[in-house]
Amino acid sequence: MSFAQAPPIPVQSSLVASIGYSANATLELEFRSGALYRYFTIPHAVFLGLIAAESKGAYFNRNIRNRFPYKRLA
Image (cartoon, rainbow, N blue to C red; front, side, top):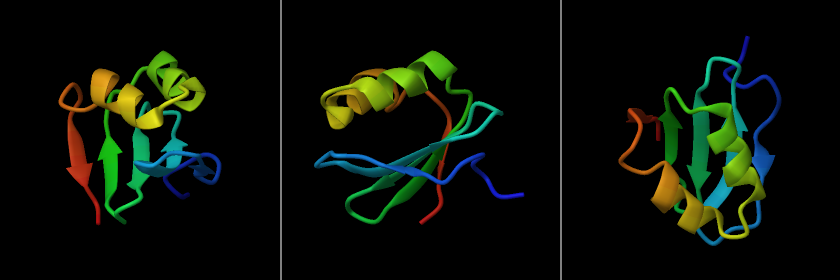
C-alpha cells in the first residue's frame, strides 16, 4: 500500500507543488524546489484548511511549519 490513500493533489501555489494526506494524519508536501517532506499528527481540519487556503504558502507558514514533527524525504 502506498503512503497516500489517493494520489497527491497538484495545487496552484508558488511554494507548494502537491499535497497528499493519509488516514493516519500524515501530510506529504512536495515543494516547488523539489523538496519532499512528510509531516506527522496533522489534524484533518488543518489539511482541509491548507487545501482551501487562497495562499498555500502563507497557510503552511502560519499553521504547519515548526508546529508538527516532520521528516525530509527528498
